[in-house]
Length: 129
Length: 129
Image (cartoon, each protein chain N blue to C red):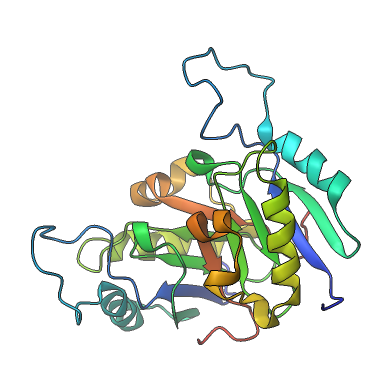
């Protein structure tokens, strides 16, 4: 596995698009994004920088993360919850970290990543692809 | 207005999520993304680099563009068509270019940008925001 640093950007302001009980009165203090930040900071392996971000602007499909590393594509994933998706995120991070240019073959990605990719951005170094 | 270079990344493979006639048989040669690339290359003002990208992974809400410049937030916008949204894209590019860190106040963005922001990514230089 590559030893390079990977940034795991986590939207700290996400209220989550899919509340556990959509009929309940929203709790203004309920911030699944902040919970996801804390859970990932606790679980992060060496070489993974967990960075809390003030809104990744994917509010209708949160919680949201983005993966980036130098010279690689940046990937944004959504519809995550701190309760369900920690293993998938950590597996996805490991594969992204090991992949040249951040390009993990579609079939090798965690199932949640396959179904919930929001967008990707090419590296600065090779924009013409 | 700032004179710095702005990258306008355009998904060249987008088939568009909203075809003109959803009941028609899809035409495999119909690539609104490629049309949008060509139209923007023709219309681009000086200092704007239009870069065709092979899939920005926002296939269900294409056509798709991303705006980026050094030290600024990257923004992804979707649900664009080459027929309708060239003026909005060029207006949005101009405001993004002039804005410090790429942060255009929400009310000043073109209406289509306000309603169709797919995601945003913080600059490498200031990830903790």
